Image 1: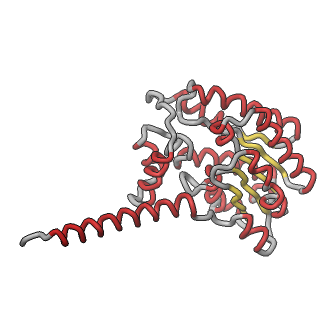
Image 2: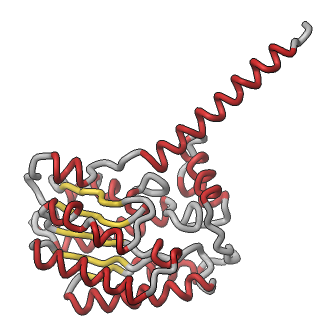
Image 3: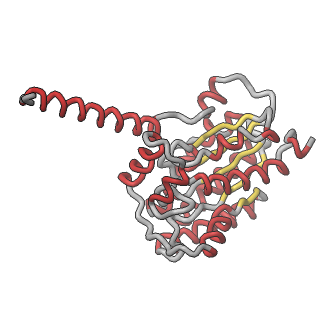
Length: 276
């Protein structure tokens, strides 16, 4: 059979269309798709919840469309039956962004508990530590003034798995601010960074140099959404354990955060199985 130029062009066009469609699918599922129960769905449009309301506020690590969805994992736990978990994570947010939307995305939900995990983008964008501290302080003060919620600040996890990297040396200053703001405000403090760092120090594998970029994040998403690989398998393909792309959580990293937040919620929020 003679292959004509027209057949080659047609096959190439079909292949290109398939690649573009796959790329669009990955882009939508990872960067465009909304998480379950956003503030708009749960607080500004939906009816008030019958049970306790917990708001998880932060950036893409909280949004959970790239990497493990720890907020979604909390919803599946039997001891939180009847709770509503609002996902107020927005990709790329800094502490300043969260401060600006604290009223519409947290206060408006009339929460019983608020979990705040923000700071990765502050470190990466070079936001001064004092600005970061001021933003966290303002967020917590607004929540304690305008709601009756219990508030917990979560320490920012490492960027990549090389604790000695320069970016992680800078990150330590931001986590000192998290600790101090929580102590001053009487808020909860959840040592997420410390839990991961402890396990990183015990591992035998060599450290992997921090090298986050959009391309790596997109490849991680494609492995998960197109090839159906678990987030742990995606992480391992990049030589990592707790992160799929040096920032977003693997299943193992997400499980640590889910356990940590669940432990605090059981003690802080009336109406959980442990408190009945």
